[in-house]
Image (tube, rainbow, N blue to C red; front, side, top):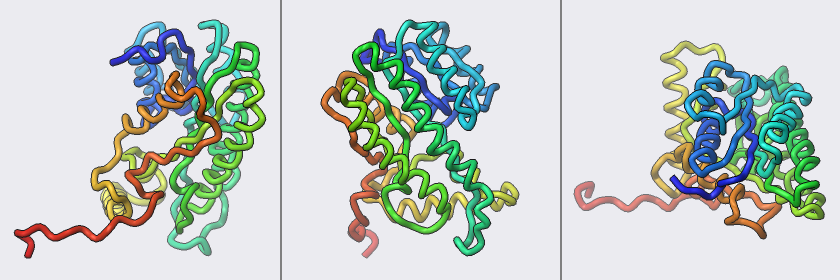
Length: 272
């Protein structure tokens, strides 16, 4: 446990579980005060309850932009300022065997959560940060927004749009000393993969997830699977004073996947 965010105030969307909860816990461990929102009230309240007065949870549906504004306003009202905004909330949508089978029925919701909410969170945070000398905004994208590929097409499109928006915002908000960066996780074990497996029973979901993860393992140079804290530590880099001259960047946290295919594994002597 360090003290890299002592005195800083942060807002995190989608902070009750998965990557968001890991980011919230890392910020708290580093001394920050954190206001976070999520639709999962039970988990959100439980997380806040374990961390005392520096953790504030609000039930938040990021498709309602006024609720994002409330998160930001609450941070300023309770703690006096806003230094860091993490637009983390995201959904994958339904997985289809082929794009030709995709009725695009979840297009509006995915774009509302993955893109519009990021834009609203960036805007609302910047409105506060511009009057206090700047700050850091971190938007969560995905390696699916960097690399082309099949499956969950709307999700991929939304995450690619987050990257472009982040770089545009970084250029405009630099006038206020506000840094805007993107983090692109990949191969991190969270529930987002299984949530895309609609209409399956528990056994089918387990097989589906195992197949996806086997494909992911074959695609990354680093053999181990990423962890939630791998992502949280990278977010800390952007949120803390480690990166004062970094803005408009996209940082993959993916075991090297975005860099390219791994080399064939060398056989061990006992395998010969």
